[in-house]
Length: 290
Image (cartoon, rainbow, N blue to C red; front, top):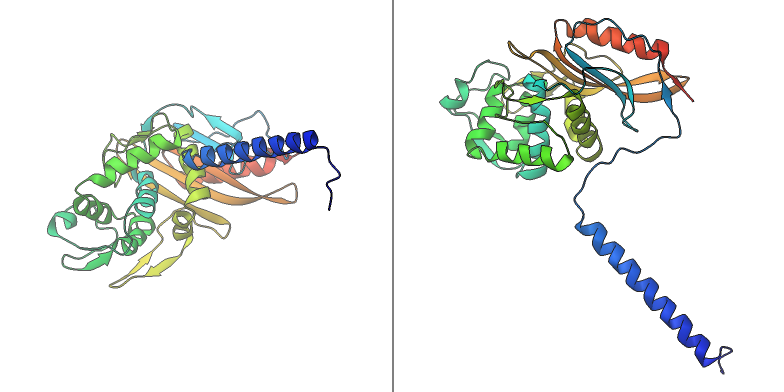
């Protein structure tokens, strides 16, 4: 069949198709080479809040929309403070992302003498890296964190700091995997970045922290969160003398007849339960979707 197009027209069309194909290939290569970073996206449903901030005991706090990252209410959210066992969210994310979850570790005396008995691990018991996530997150086991440090020869700490830097946090630093060190520090802004990244790319961390309990190979681990409710969607709390009480928590809140996932970050609190209650009441009383 004779072509209906002039040879010059065929040449032009062929050139255009070649350029389009090259552009598509370049875009594909560029996308695959780019690091995986969770970007803050704008939302067509804007959140507005009243100007009056709640009176709570925390030194720093930040409440934000999980989807868009938008701040609802904040106080000293760029101040860098010790974060205590909130560190374990970064620990768990690093384990899930970096290490073989089927690798096993036998509890040693060096792990057992770590401060605190949460998790109730016993010398001689053997667990997989995956199993240890449950005492780490549900009971805030410092022994479980010590196992990860010992078995990886502290490589986990290097990997944790690498992940924090990759995500774009400015001041999030891990000196250990448990949060016992006062040098484990971050601002509430840093923890917002970490929380949203884990929620998006490694949601199993928060899935674990929603559980009431978990039957392990040797023992049943129970969630010791002081703010666990029916619409709680995960988080982690902590305490050291230097940090006082700290928290990352996620809740599904009913706002303007729509369910919205809200993140709460609290550092340096004297009373986590009351501070969370007041912040949640502030959101429900003053926030609307436009």
